[in-house]
View 1 (cartoon, rainbow, N blue to C red):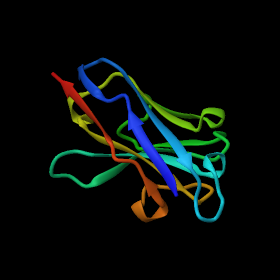
View 2: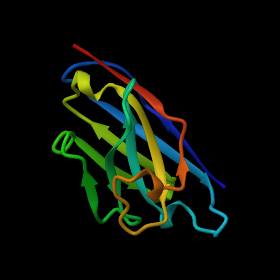
View 3: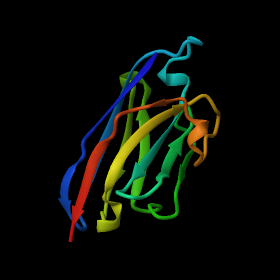
Length: 129
């Protein structure tokens, strides 16, 4: 199984930055390892759906973002470290949510939850006014 663990969340004032990390271990039953997975970040605010934030292809060559974070957030990965990152800058109170990382067997996963097969437990981001 693939185990994903997020970290880096916390309390930050509006306009501040956080760098979230997601460390992967193990491998899928298919034998696929982190380097062969596309990855995504999602977030879920209280009382809201789990929403897509960003995704990245297996080799990091292509990145995709929700309109709400475009220009402020950057998704990246370091396959040698089995780690996915989300650099979140210019944070706004509306960015407050639990942030989840997820893996996908698809070449270019999008915003649909069922495009992802493994999920982390989430890390809390709170942005104060």
